[in-house]
Amino acid sequence: MRSAEPSDIGGPGTDGGAPAAKAGHVVAACYLGWMLDAFDYFIMAFVLDDVARSLGVPISATAFAITLTLASRVVGALVFGRLADRFGRRPTMMVNVVCYAVLELLSGFATDFTMFLVLRALFGIAMGGEWGVASSLAMESIPARWRGLVSGLLQTGYPTGYLLASLLFLLEPTIGWRGMFMLGALPALLVLYIRRAVPESPDWQQRGEQAHHQPLLAVLRRHWRVTVHAALMMACFNYLSHGSQDLYPKLFLAHVHHLGTGTISALMVVFNLGAIAGGLLFGPLSQRIGRPAAIAVGALLCLPAIPLWAFSHGVVLLGLGGFLIQLAVQGAWGVVPAYLNEVSPGTVRGTFPGAVYQMGNLLAAPNANLQLWIAGQAGGDIRWAMGSVVGCAAVLIALLMLLGRDTRDVRMGHERRPDVAA
Image (cartoon, rainbow, N blue to C red; front, top):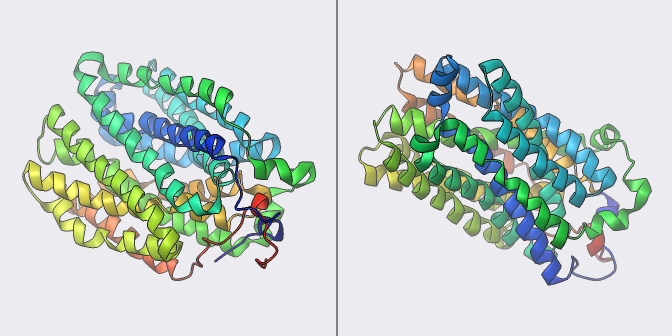
């Protein structure tokens, strides 16, 4: 399923993109932006119970803070995406990074739970803008033949951020949950690198002023089928990832298996190494076998991994299960940055990938509370909740990919080729 406009396809006979050195800086900055965004987000997964005790609320309330963060990300995708389409990817990304870093810092100073919820909602808005802006900047700045590789690389920023949060968790007994949030302000330093080394998207520059003013709703109405398909796909993707990640450290490893801080941190490192391997493997694979096929293979590989991941015992088997489930989950995810940018209408590419991603996130926002409800129906066993959510999401992704169309040959505006039909 493809929605590229005529202006997306073709260009003056080049394989496109900025010169290799500049393109490398773009990829590095976009990878770091998503990595540090995920680092800030996943701090919450490690301090759910600490925040609850400190602010005098039940753990279900702090789980709702995760739901609120996910739900508000769609606002950020629309706001920052429109800014990126109007004023450029580079300056919007700089503002975006500063916003999520400052809001993470302020979360550590929350004096009551209401204030904490407001800050986490605002953080969600800032987080929701980063992925779409960064992915469009990267995909528009590189040669087409790089897109599968770079897609997988960009998406590994997410588990790398999770890995960093896992390592920071080792300091939690010393610095507390507030100290962990305060250290989350460090990503603001990335703006200095973006300002110095990262050029603007050549695709955005070539489209001209008129293209940047096209009404978003009018464009989406013209491409409503791809919009609906992409939003549903991303809802399933977010249930797949958040269903396997958000409650895993504290409510599974700590509460079910009664593991200590050091063991949980070590297992989460293994967990995220599997995720990084998956993105690096499946992104390039999609360049060979096509985007829908690579996504479907990654999603379906989750199914044989679920029993080992959710129902095994012992640190070694838990580590192996965590590695394998994330290899599959983030393998499928590693194709998403390329796929969503390739199906996007070019005039709203700063908005479309992030918007449909976060529309999916909005639909998947109740994941934490849904898993707690399922666990309650299963006698408090979180394992059945994790397994059922991830399994259902994996199957639905594979089915949706049957309706998709391979997009790896779609050309961005600066890659226009006369032999490629619209």
